[in-house]
Length: 274
Image (cartoon, rainbow, N blue to C red; front, side, top):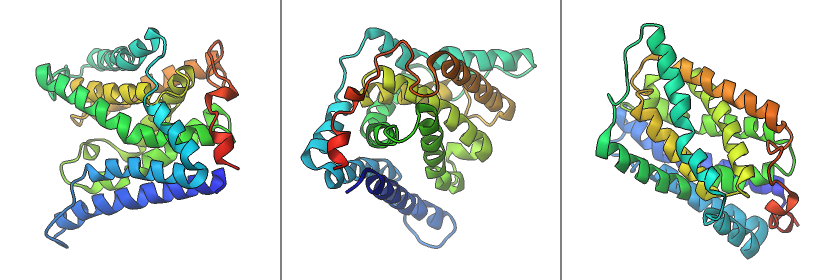
């Protein structure tokens, strides 16, 4: 199976399985059915889809390559600090701007203390094995064989954002607290940051999962999911400014100027495409 066909299969199944799961919650909320599937199955389905697409496109070699990315923990300590801590200053800048504009302090109103730590650890583990195995582990290296890092980030960001659409129709989901266009804008910016991190850590899904979990935890801990539209849009602006700086300093082609990117990052992809 060619790289292109494996990507089509991957995205088709990723959307289908997740949307079917979330669709049961939407149907139940509208009185169409009287049950719903556990929503976390939508995430775990991504792990299955990633492994299946890798196996069909490149056999055992591609599956082992994907598993090695998940377990790629030997990276410079600096990048662990980036993955865990980057979203804190970005979020605090947005909060500070909102306070200067007369907004309320949202820090800790949604999540704090021990519950915050539990959420952070749980979210990191879940993201490593589900979303990041899919978006960064399987899709990103294959897309990056065909397009620049910036273009791949935007392509993947759009698809990743659209994948979340059903959540905007599920009562009680955090997505109902902010505008869809703003969500897509944030996803596009953060996708650029993900690519930068991924390419600097030799394609580590493990580090991408830490960053994803930390971003989600900080997002909730700093109150960005509380429904304050101005605060949310300020975060979008701050993340886009940071992404713009990365593009300027690192280069849109690889997002790794001064880094350690090379074709040897993705040794199994050429095998998988044959």
